[in-house]
Length: 117
Image 1 (cartoon, helix red, strand yellow):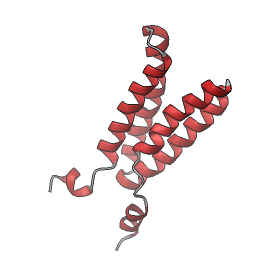
Image 2: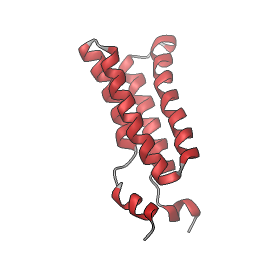
Image 3: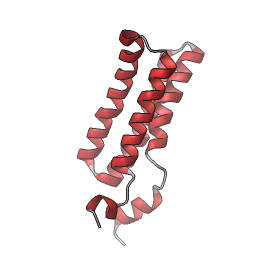
Image 4: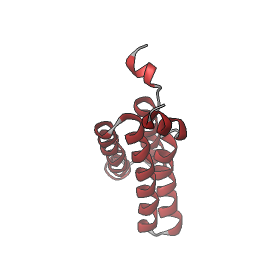
């Protein structure tokens, strides 16, 4: 068994979980406490955990791409709430579901599924 195989075996947490926690719980913490920085800490922690999982499972390039998508989801939630006029929770819910689904589809599928076997 190679080191990368052992790493994958130890990290069965779906990467969609820290993505959802970072976005939705981060927003909830910021809104409920009135402390945006505290929500930012939750957002950053979710991103760091997800980034580590992405890198372990798919490598640095994919992790970087998913990291950009994670931050873009955060920005898009603000755009949808402020510029488009959606309720804040609706915007956060939509972007959280999209980012978690993308993370799951790209990073959490088995290697055999990715290779088409």
